[in-house]
Length: 102
Ligand code: FES
Image (cartoon, rainbow, N blue to C red; front, top):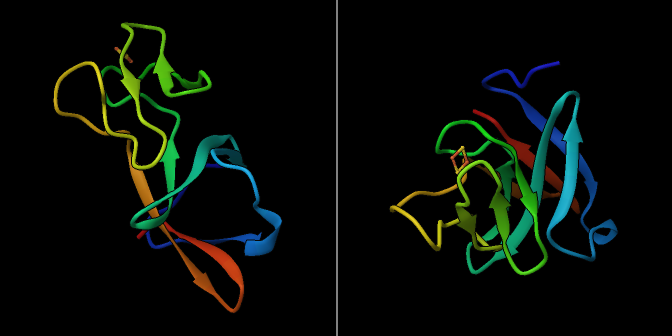
């Protein structure tokens, strides 16, 4: 499965997410659900540099291909060029987290 544009996904009840970042799999695609000042976001595990895999290394996300690291609330790169992990908004609707891929 691949994420289609104009697609929303119900990630489940907000109350079921208590620890962040939370790895979320939607079909064959993987994301980290994070929360910060701007609310919830899904951050794609595909590196914005050259498409490596971004993993959670405890205090930050990291892509081992070239060592870019990203902070946990919005996926901002912290040791390289001005870059961010690909992100998708998540809203709360009727107590559920809804990811928006529009
Ligand atoms: S592909 Fe991720 S740092 Fe280069």
